[in-house]
Length: 169
Image (tube, rainbow, N blue to C red; front, top):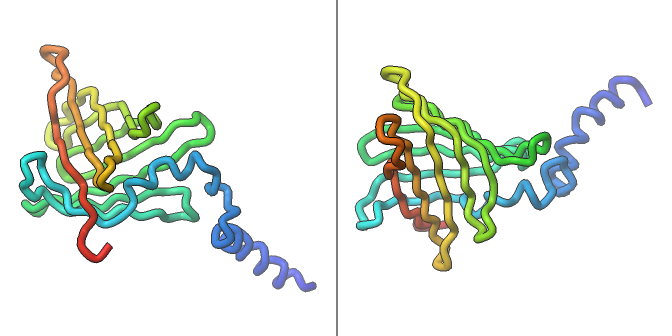
């Protein structure tokens, strides 16, 4: 076999493994956040439409990418991944308003809980931040974010959304 053929086979091998489900990110830990994958309408607890969100698996199932669009026109994206080095899930969220970086994992109840920090783009202000994604019996997902008030030390609701699958999914 020629060197060129060997190089071509080596280049195709990771894609073939991923398609066969035998890639490096096929272990069960990499599927813990799969309940969030899909196309969603996101509403407030009172039922008001907040925006839409599309969450997909990419990079051979090693990455979950979020693409948010609010009803007011704001957008944001996140990269979510399980890190086998520290055995935690990580998320990096970036929008025009803020950067959020946090980590964590599944709770005993099956919710994804991440904790870290938010940094506001406008002034660089930083605060502790946490989020919980809870799958519900009806197929929806409850997402709740909190920010720690640096002056009082108290946790404040930052955003609460109920994810329901978009029609056609």
